[in-house]
Image 1 (tube, helix red, strand yellow):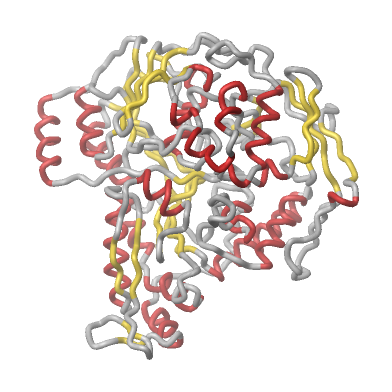
Image 2 (cartoon, helix red, strand yellow):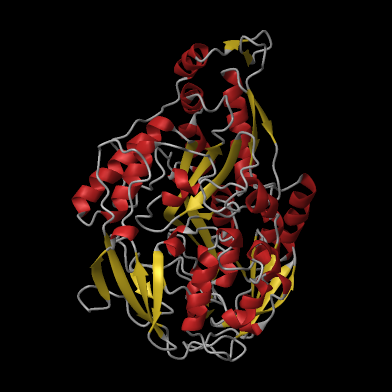
Length: 579
C-alpha cells in the first residue's frame, strides 16, 4: 500500500509577521457561515491531479472530494467499502482461495536468509460490485470497462504510475457484467480484501491519452483538461484550476451518495503559514486544512491566543517525520556514518523545545499507535562521544577548522533538503545543522518548493544526501514500497516505487515477503518486530519524530473528523456542514 508524503508549510518573514500583527488587531473570526461556499486554505498545490501518478497529500486532500477508492480505512481504522458494495471475504463467498498454477508460483526474489519462508503458492479471487449508481460527472456510468483500463495502465511500467505492485499481482480480471468483476490475484495476503490503491480512471477519456504509455504522464486529462466533469464521480467535481493559486469544486449532480451541504468549495493555496493565519482570522479563508496547514508549534501558539474563538485539537497519527538518506552516496553507504548521525542528533531536545514533548522521538518507521509497534529495537540517545568514535573509525578525522576530513583530504559534508519555507522543518534543519557541526559534519541546507521536491527530487532520487519529509501511512502498512529492493525508483521503471533511499537488504526483502502472507497475528507481530529492529540497526533514514496533525476549527463548522492515517478528512466531505 502506498504511503503519502506529509504536508508542508512556509516560513514567515519579518515583514509578514508585522502585517499579521496588524491584522490580528483589526479582525475577528467569522462566527457564522452560509452553506453556499466553503473556502479552505492549505499550504501545497498538487503536482498532478491524476489519482495514480505521484503520491502527494495535497492531491489526495483535493481528489478525495471528487473521487472514491474501492476500499479505504475509516476514522475507526477499519477497512470499509466506498466505491464497492461489499468487502469480499471467504465467509461470504466473494473471496476464494486458489492453488496457483506452476507458472504463477513466485520464487523468493532473494537468496533467502532462513529467518522466514514466504509461501507464494496460494492465490485468491476477489469479487467486487461497483456502486450501482456510480456515474462519472459527464453522465457516463462507472463500469468494469474503467476497471480493465485502470489495470492496463497500472501494470505498465511506462505509465508513470507510482506503485505498480498492486496491479502486477492481478493476473486476470474476469468481467461478470458492467458493474461486477472478479480479480485473480497471485498472492494470498493477510489484507487481501483491501484494494485501496486500485484508483479508478475513466476509460472513455483517458484511453486515448494512454495510446503512447511513455507519454501518459504528460498527456493525462487530469492535468491537460482538469475541469472535464468526466474525470470525477465523487460528491464534488473540479470546475476551476489556477496553478499555484486555487482549485474550485462544485457539487457533482451525478453523485450517488448523500448530498453535500456546501454548494461550492474553494481550496486556496497559501504557502506562508503566517498569511494562512491572517486569512483565517480575517474570514478570507473559512478553514485551514488540518492535514496541510499549520505546523504543530504554530498551532500551539494559536491555541494560546485564540483558543476561545476556535476549537483546536491535535490528532496523533501514523505520520513519521524522518530524513531519507541516499545510500548511493559513498559516504552514507557506510553504516558507521549513518549511526554517527543519530548519536550526534539531540532529537529529544527537538521534541521538548519545539513541540513540548507532544511529538515523541521516532525510533522506527512504525508509529507507537499501530498494534505492530515494538520497543525491543536499538535506540540512539544523544551521545556525541559515540558519534565521534564511529566517525574516527570510518576514517573521518577532525580537521583544523572543526570539520572532519578523510585521508584524501575530502571534507565531511552533506546537503540537507526539504520543502522550501516549512517553518518547523527549517527550524529542525538549523538545529541539526548546529548539532552535526559539533561532531565535525558540515551541513548545507538547500530547500525546494514542494511541487519540485516531491515531484522530481525525491521521486527521481535527485537529492545527493538527505531529504527531510514525512510518510503518512495506513494501519499495519507493509513497507514494501519504501523498503523492498524491488521498489527502488529508476529511469528504467519510470521512477515507480518509493524506496527513495536505495535500501537493498536481503533480510528486509524476506521479512516483507513473509509479513504479507502471514495470517497468524502473533507470528506476524514477531516478523514486524524483526523488521523494525533491522531498520533501526541499518538506518536507511534518520528517524526524527512521530507527528500529530493540528486541526483548527471555526466554531460554526462541524462534521470534519480527523482520521490519524493517510486517508484525509475530505473523503467524507459530504458530512461537513454549518453547525
